[in-house]
Length: 118
Length: 114
Image 1 (cartoon, chains in turn orange, cyan):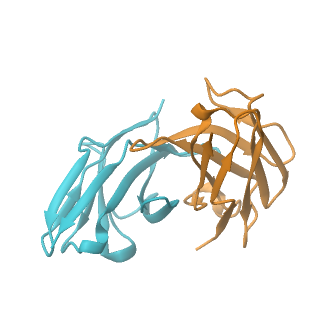
Image 2 (cartoon, chains in turn cyan, red):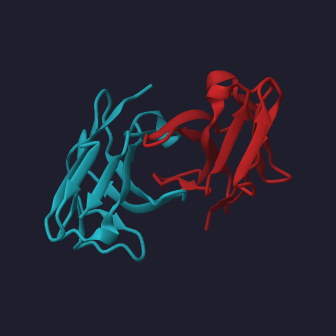
């Protein structure tokens, strides 16, 4: 199946700093990528839909100025957590769907990034 | 709006016994249905999907799921559970048409006991 690479896997940062997480589709093109956040023992919460070459679409309650999303190419989307605070500590997961196949295909997920803000 | 319900937080089964993880869904139109598995501190791995066609879908690692339109269900099953099947399982749905994101259930933790 298609491979989505996410980096870094683990990151620890000080409160007030910014952290960038990268999501790459390695062997396919993805015009759309999705960013999810997962709290301990909970399901995935969709944060935003990242569209190549245009602005991301954020879900209700997600601060777009805090969670900056950039989708500069068909294989790369980035999530930047700005001025991070301890409550931003979470597991962030990106996903992508192959643009071919009429959009019926499954999502392929990155391995996730564990963010800990001290 | 679309939604998914996984009524069980935890399912325990003895190794070698059949397992079922339940999922019901709600969509306005016809659904695309998926099952994913997550191991600790890892991303999600795709197991199987239902798009159209046969109601019984076979997927990875011996898992299968049956689409039941009248009951709006898509339960995950395996005839003989393995200890290595122990993980967190997510059911997901999205409407046909458009590039819409998946909506996930809350997840069901499966424990297979040797």
